Length: 141
Image (cartoon, rainbow, N blue to C red; front, side):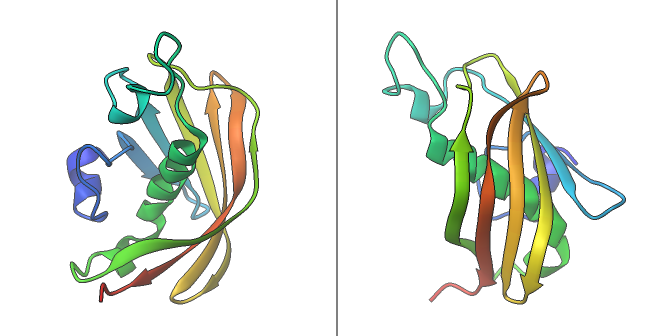
């Protein structure tokens, strides 16, 4: 699934759409990819002369990649996914401009409208970050 197809599911748009492509695997997990271009807004001040992708952005990338797993729930244009928690998040390696991130996410628990997932980001097979996250799919107030 490319960026335009992802936009049919996720409400995110530039500059906050942080997934280039996502695939739903046979086991129900999702695998996504994002190439850090170097001109992203979050790199402008993090850090000048030595840009790295902030950890909170890595967590957002995980959540967006997982969104494809909830395509049916997300197709209603009146719903939005909202983070409800992060747990056991670890950062092991910086992510830099020019690198292609692989994102792997798997559903741990589901009790609609809340979902708990586990995800990891890696570059060239080396884990950069991992953690568990939860979110709800709800209608905006």
